[in-house]
Image (cartoon, rainbow, N blue to C red; front, side, top):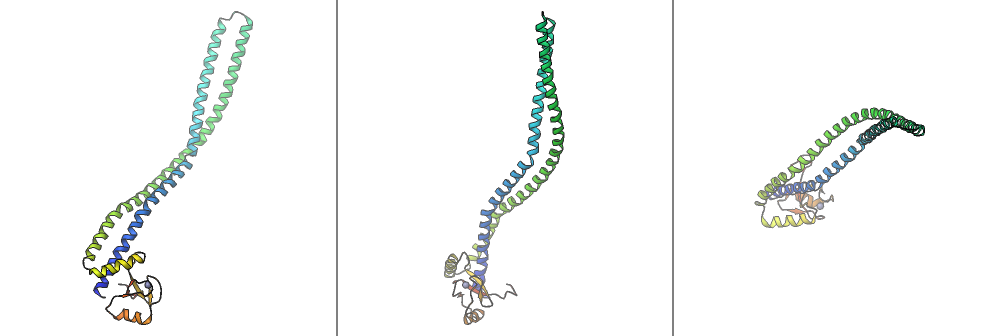
Length: 239
Ligand SMILES: [Zn+2]
């Protein structure tokens, strides 16, 4: 293949790689953000049982302190009963104790059902912990893979830019200007292959005579449709 054309093809390869890398750099942070959000909502969903467990646990503690207060009240009333002078007062205190004991009974019933629920929930919470751990491991692995990928982008860009600069030194100035101009007008692709008389840049047919010329001539030829610099490539036998 013509030497100048070969240089342009390599230059185009560098440029295409750089375009891909810059797209990657734009896309990857969004992918990380998406992964973070997904994990957050997964975590929220899985922690519902735990939240319920904590809520019931708090109610249980509250009930225990209520019972403690009721018991203290009963003790005090009983102490006061020892000093009571008349029967009416004594009866009132007995009534007071009775009410306190009945309210203690209600609280105790609540405590029993709370403890049953807490038992059931604690089994679920344990299972959820395991599921959450697995989910977190998977999320962290995926996130690290994307971050590594993203961190590698800058180094890759530097590599391709250096390659490009080395190549560019050997491309004649006027040819480079033409290439850049055509590339700018054609979505970043200035050089394109042609196979079976079809331009791979714009997918249009090349006139038969021009296609023949392309295979034989040493001149740099352009696609009559998209203007890209063309080279003949046997697709069954890649360069
Ligand atoms: Zn074309």
